[in-house]
Image (cartoon, rainbow, N blue to C red; front, side, top):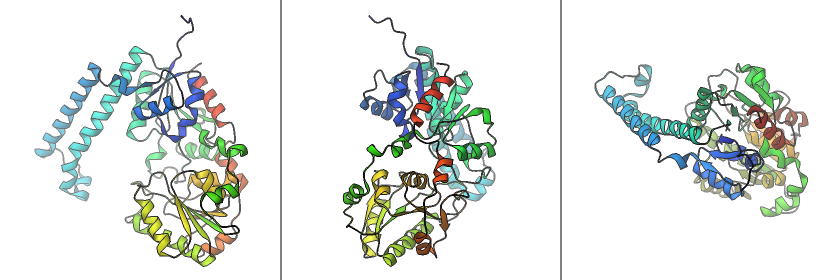
Amino acid sequence: MSDEAPKPVLLMTGNLTLAPLFVPLAEHFRLAFADDAFAKAAEGFDVKDVLSLADFSGDTAVLDAKGQAMLAAADLVEEVGNGKLTLGTATKLHGQALLRWLPVSAFEMLSMSIARISACSVLQKKEGIAGVLVHEDVTPNGRVLAQFGNAMGIPTMHLPHANHFLRPGSGDIHCTAVAEHLGVTGPYMRDWYSACGVMDDRMTTVGMPRWDKLYDEERLPSKAQARNAFGIKDGERVLGYGTTWFQVTSVWGDNPEAYLTESLHTVIAAAKETGAFLLLSMHPGELEEQVNFYAQEIRGAGIRGAVARAHPEHTLRAMDCLVSQGPSNFGIEANILGTPVVELFVPGARYPDGGPEGTWGKDLVSTIDRATVHPGFATAMNAGASSIERTVEWVRATCSL
């Protein structure tokens, strides 16, 4: 029997942002995941003794909590029914339809949150929790974990999944910070959160772990290999297009879908005018059926092209220039790899000064022709290689290991 002391438990979310940390963190912690899917993903990396909050879903305390959520939602239904709840301005804007779906939505939110908090409490009681690490703390999953840790006096850490290019204080949900500690990617993110009111002593610069591979030439495809993967001909000019998706935030206006379709047609027209192969890289948040839509639009324009949903290193290496729909983190990856970027503007967000040149679209071709790489931009956005090591040490220090 081993006399080795058990590893402390680190409660965390999943996501591509944290996946590169699973194995190195497991050297120091026993990992517990909020979502069972990521617990299984960690096991796929051969991480041992993984825990999941789903392991505690049958506990009496969790089942009781779900019952509380049902009662709370029933109370809300009753208040809506007897007219006690009108929601003021929201009701005027959306009519009674809002009140019809609100109780069901409230039940789903309450049920998830209360059950998750209860499972966290059971985990804390049975195993102890040394720290909480999330890739976002503004949507229900990450916020609940961060708030639980804060309430219990457990160190809470937020490793943001992306740089944000909204105006600080714009009212967008990303301008808030719930976790006690932030691991920021570089100078730009530190300044951005400072402008949002986060004190400097809450932030540590660690970089973006999932970008470490972009600095390792041995792990990257050559340009020739990348172009061959997409069937691109020798000497063929390749115009890249990084799409985006519209979220219900302060960025978008009333009809974002039509705006993005118009932008797609602008890029297709530029590819046709220049005789370029159009390599379209989809945003991970887009729906699967968008693949067919994009493919049909490219075929309908009579140009050569391809649509990719993954393998960003291959897509960026194959491109001669990337047109980024709005200020995307995909453009940061392109800069790190030495691919020139043009920003195709969206309402309400911009790359900062010193970043890629942008346009609303009328002069897209000439902007592409003079596009260049901005090394200082990549440095401002990311601390460089070895982010995984810096992040692991930050987590250990924050958890007092």
